[in-house]
Amino acid sequence: MTDSLLELLARRMLVQHELVSADLTLACTNPGFWTLIGEVPPTGRISVFEVMPELFGLEEEIALILAEGTGEVTLPCVTRAASEYGAEGTYLDIALIADAAVAPCLLLIATDVTNQSVQQRGLMQSRNENALLQEKLTQMNERIREHSHSLELAVSQRTRELRETRLEIIRRLALAAESRDPLARGHLSRMSRYSAMIAEQIGVEESERQIIYHASLLHDVGKIAIPDRILQKPGPLSTEELTEMRRHTIYGADILGGSTWEFMRAAVTIALTHHERWDGQGYPNGLKGLEIPLFGRICAVADVFDALTMKRPYKAAWSVDEAAAFVAKQSGSAFQPLMAEAFADILPDVRRAQAQDGSEESSLEELSEG
Image (cartoon, rainbow, N blue to C red; front, top):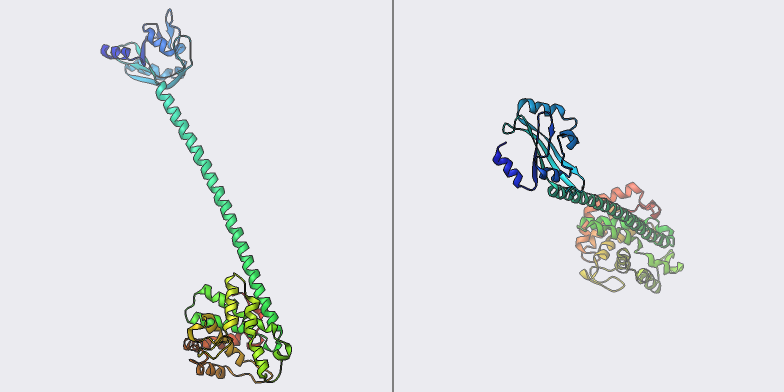
C-alpha cells in the first residue's frame, strides 16, 4: 500500500483505515477510523478481534496472509449500531490487507456502504413486495379462473337442463297429438327423421338440422283441436269435414305461437306450412314456390311420403317404391324439385332407417334426442 493510496483513502470520508501489527493488535493512529466504526478510540494497543469480533473464525486465513505478506480477508456488510461516538447505524465493508508498503503490519480498512446497503435492502424489499404482490395476483387470478370455470360449468349445465326440458315439452306435445290417432303411431318420429335427412342432403347446417328434427315433431299438433268424429272417421271426409281437418295447420300455429325459442318458432312455421304446395294449390294460405318457408318445403315431402306408407282405415299402406315414385311424380307441382331430388338421393338411407326401427312400430317413446 503506497503513501499516495493511504492519503487518498484518508481524504475519502467513507473509507478509513488503521494499521494492525504482526501480533494482531492496533492502536489509535487514525481517529476517523474509530469514529466511522462507532468505537471508543483505545488509549493503548487493542486486539483486532476485540475491535472486529466478526474476524473470529478467520484466524487461519489471517495467519496465511501474514506469512505470505500478500492477500486479504474481507467481511462484507458488517453492521454497526448507532453510538455516541459517531456511528449512526452503519453498514461497513471490512478488509484486512497484507501489503509490502506496510509490512510487517496489516492494513485494516473500513468502508461505509450504508447508502448502498440501504438502497440494496430497499430494492430487495421492493422486489420481495413485488414478488409477494405478484403471487397474490396470481392466486387471485387463479381463484377468478376457477370461479369463472365453475360459473361456466353451472351455466352450461343449466343451459343443457333447460334445453332438455324444452325438448321434453316438444315430445310430450307430440305424444299428445299422436295419441289422438293411434293408427298413426310412429308417423311423427319417422317424419322428423326424414326431414332432417333431407335437410342434410341439401346442405342445411347441423344447428338448423337439429331444429327441424325436433320442431317437425309438432307439425300435426293442431289435430288436438280436431273433433274425434272427423279425426278418426274410417271413411272419406265430407267437404265440410275436410275443410275442418285442414284447419289443423292453423290450430297448430295458434297453439305453438308466441314463443321466443327458435325451436318453437320453427315448429309454428312447419305446422302452418307443411301442407302448402310448390304450385300454390296447397293450404291454408295457398303459398307458391319460394313463398313457402324452407322448413315447410322440406317437411312437406317427408310428411306425404310417410303418410302414404301408413295403413289407414280408408286405404292400404303403399310400398316404399310406390310412395317414392309418387314423390318423384309430384316434383314441380306438390314439391319443390330440389326437395324431391334430395329425397330420391336419401331413399337408400330411408330404407335402412325403416328396416332398423321396424317402420310403423317406431314411436316417439323410443325417439332419441338427436
